[in-house]
Picture 1 (cartoon, rainbow, N blue to C red):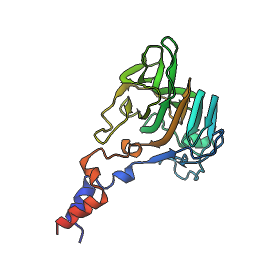
Picture 2 (picture 1 turned 135 degrees about the vertical axis):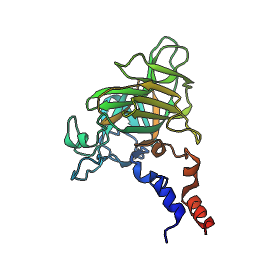
Picture 3 (picture 1 turned 60 degrees about the vertical axis):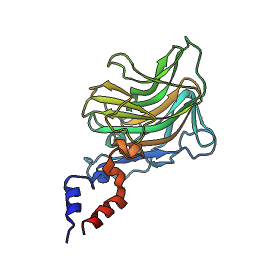
Picture 4 (picture 1 turned 180 degrees about the horizontal axis):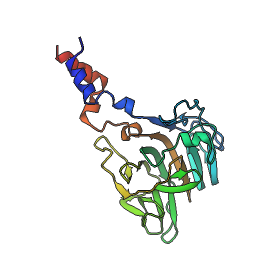
Amino acid sequence: MKNPLVSSLIAYGFLTLASQAALIATENFDYVDGSVAGQTGGTGWNYERNDEAGAPAQSPSTWNSAFGSHQIVSSTLVTNGGGVLREFGGSTEGIGATNEQEGAFRASGVMFFSTSITVAEMLPEGQNQWAGVSSFDFGEERIFFGMPGQTGTTRFFGIAAPGFGADTIGSIPVVAGTTYTIVGMLDFDNDQLGLWVNPDGDDTAATFDVSKAYNGGNWSTSLRWASGTSVAWDNVRVGTTFGDVVPEPSTPLLALGAAGVFFLIRRRH
């Protein structure tokens, strides 16, 4: 006989959250020291939208050199006056390639990513400094999450979206040598950009540290990691929900986990 509690949880969607989410990709840069261009490690990076019926399975996309200097150092990506890019959609990649279209967020849905970021040193006041993760629409950079270009004594985390007003700079400073976890959100459905810095178990998809209105009709096909000075990156996750990229549960029910649900079921008997 079906347990009424399980039926209720399913009816309210609590046990289907995992199936509705999609972890698109992960990357820990576990490569030998040297160039990351052409590497295919991590997991995923072969995302396909559900509306592409019959689309063939793809092998992972490769890391591509975007510009300038970048390398793997002790299983960490280091960019320094350069950047690297990776498509969501698989190995048959390139600007306008079919698979990149299949793996794109086509001005709808929500894309989340998380990554660690460590800025080696801060430039003196008056010198422009920047570092961040950008959402690309095929060959065009559209949105920038991280530390937009700033020249002040202290630089702060923020969001930039050319064509949608001035950069939105938050109140959390970037400190040299400190490792942060940043989470970015591109929500086409609600015309919203979001950025979290060191999110914890109390954070949700609505508790931004920085947010910006955005109603762009572009697509999101890939992400680029880049910086003007030496910056280390690691622990990349890309998904369609906040929970995909932030390991801590964001609601008490999710914190129950399978063991907690099993305990509640037993209590009903």
